[in-house]
Image 1 (tube, helix red, strand yellow):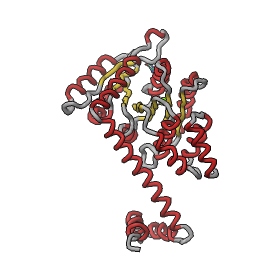
Image 2 (cartoon, protein in one colour; image 1 turned 90 degrees about the horizontal axis):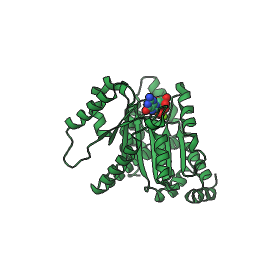
Image 3 (tube, helix red, strand yellow; image 1 turned 90 degrees about the vertical axis):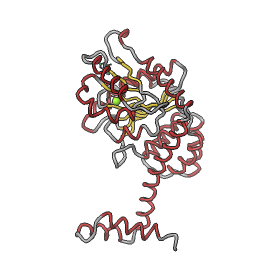
Image 4 (cartoon, rainbow, N blue to C red; image 1 turned 30 degrees about the horizontal axis):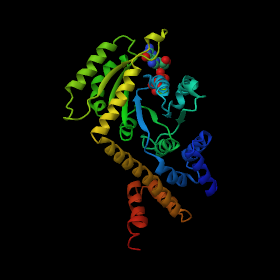
Length: 329
Ligand SMILES: Nc1nc2c(ncn2[C@@H]2O[C@H](COP(=O)(O)OP(=O)(O)OP(=O)(O)O)[C@@H](O)[C@H]2O)c(=O)[nH]1
Ligand SMILES: [Mg+2]
């Protein structure tokens, strides 16, 4: 894509052109030519949306809950962006289709933008593209961005570094795992959602979760995670409940962040994370580009294969040669 086309693309994106939003995201997701230029132009327009992270085990009801929250935010007159990170593995392809069908009713609503991202970072956490895409949706201009990730460890930790409010979704059947999860979960969750509260065992599990919060060593003045029941699916619409309270709690938490000046800390953490990810990929690009045509990369790999060297020593050598000594050159 020509540079002036990129300028035009970003201009339209900032003007609220949805087609351009989709095209920009695809360009950045695939790391195509011009993506750095896009991000440079997009960045000054970011940072205005409220970001809600939703994580939890597969099938806990994250997408179903997201779907209801979208509708409620829309009723409040808010525009919503949704990012579904790796919504299903290649082995459970049906789940992603499920997400699509479930959220299809928002497809005609110009106030909602939903995007699935297939890729995860190579280290298991969220990829650089994911952060860039969230920035792009912010620049496009929505009030709220919901980011759904599967809670498989690293992703949960990542989400807490940029979401303003983090929801961790549990279900009654998970009671046995509670001991193992308790420790980490309280550091991540601002709101602990007990979804499928219609199922047996929900009340006991809620009691356990509340007990864990009470027993936790939460510093004075810090946010105390709320435990909230939720029923997202039922034959009788009247039985679907808990989501108004969740929205109320999201705003309560956001107000708390304002008051406690934690918003600045979140901004800082988010940038720290993004800087690291961008540095990683740009440095690798730069170095592999530098090695191109020298035959060195092949030599290094063969040396490792031959047992004369190891990857850490090779990287050290490359850094010594191409990065650390550059200042002397
Ligand atoms: N009984 C009951 N079932 C629910 C409830 N909420 C969601 N479900 C069902 O749970 C299943 C999984 O829901 P999803 O929303 O796809 O769960 P998810 O956490 O997004 O799943 P992944 O994205 O695959 O990790 C679906 O069949 C939903 O209909 C609830 O409150 N009660
Ligand atoms: Mg889902």
